[in-house]
Length: 233
Image (tube, rainbow, N blue to C red):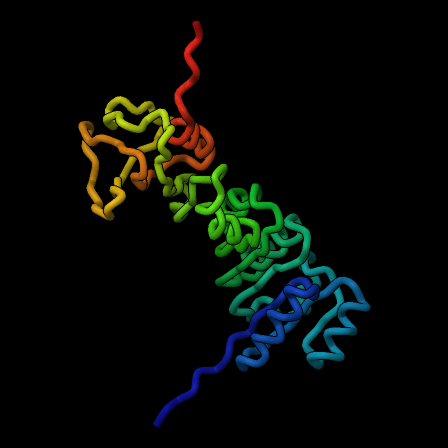
């Protein structure tokens, strides 16, 4: 006999286009959903389209979240157009109502780190997601972030060494990297990966995988990608 798993109770803070379509998908997937929307007109539109799954109110306020039954919610998704509101909603849900999983939409990618430091479980930035896909095609953005490492402020990045790079033809021991940055892997143009040593030569066309502090990303880009400075006479 197969026992079906009950759906989750998911609160969506923000009833704009993102919140509406999320709620619609979740309802269709048999989850119990409540949308909290501050604008009465938007709330009425959601109710007309999706039924009685919307509550008017400010999803940042503890009294509103209490009325929404947040203490029994499995997950809270904060997807308003305001990063500060999304952060506050997630923090109140986590600290006041012990919600196990919080997800926040981030409109400004520069805010990702503070969301992470303040224990928001998942952050979603459309800007960062799109840039990750198109950066390899942009000549001025040859550095792609592969993943971020927990709360340590570190990230693993990938970049291809251009022909005019200042490090092309140098050994790794000759390359001056930013603080707490390290080259983890070098993949040659023919696809041969190698764990580098101090004597490994960096050649044009190599793909380099490195770990660096997030704030050192620009310094790493300059160290590995820019051409050498012009000689003065």
